[in-house]
Length: 151
Image (cartoon, rainbow, N blue to C red; front, side):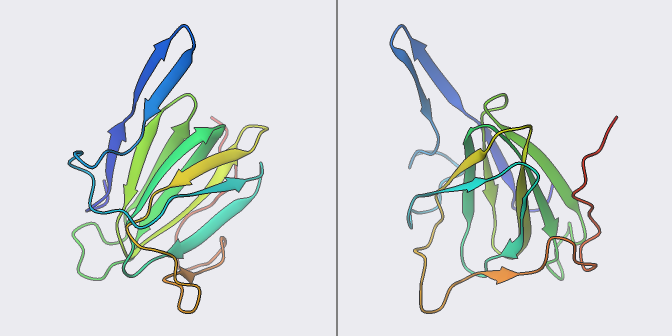
């Protein structure tokens, strides 16, 4: 696993009315601080990536559909420099994924429906000076192919 990346299996509490799923609590070991909360969606066969943040830690939870989230450690001097991690998260695998600063990441919906991701980053989005740095999804700088892998 890339240094600083953490996962948390999410607790789903069902009853006859439906269910409640806790995502991130301030008493979790994985919690740092609260910046804001937002939702991003991805259409099937679309890749949202690559990007990273210099200050911000992300906390992704896919609450509807399924997503493949891919991380790449481009941090010079990191113990896991050059490592790639794939995570399949969503309705069939309720997981919170913590993505540290400077780790490249992207995601795509898998299957035939939108993937809805809730993110609780540690920083507010700064519209004047966004902490967001991008590369194209098919860049040669990251040794990863987003194509569907048939087994």
